[in-house]
Length: 94
Image 1 (cartoon, rainbow, N blue to C red):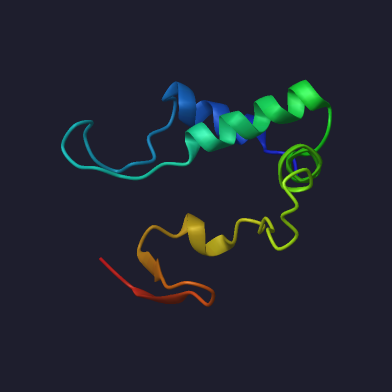
Image 2 (cartoon, rainbow, N blue to C red; image 1 turned 60 degrees about the vertical axis):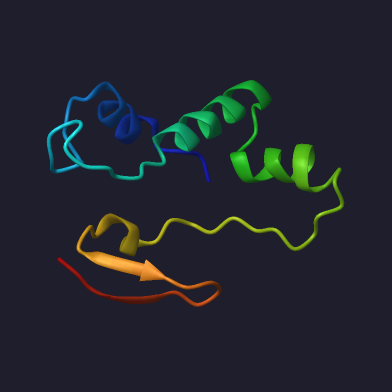
């Protein structure tokens, strides 16, 4: 699935805050770098990221059990916490 560039780049340029706190005051993980790499892979190869990953990385390495998941709506809900391997357990958080 191609990355939604119009939705991604405003966050990268800082046009709309998404962290909810002042820079340097706390730490928050962000996948922006991975999103940008995915966009570069799509641009360079001319293929959707999952196809390029399979053809260029997992296929040649003989990895047949790797899979990409579509991002769930859960990832956009900052007050939920996910944990676990395989099945994710989640609960409401502050």
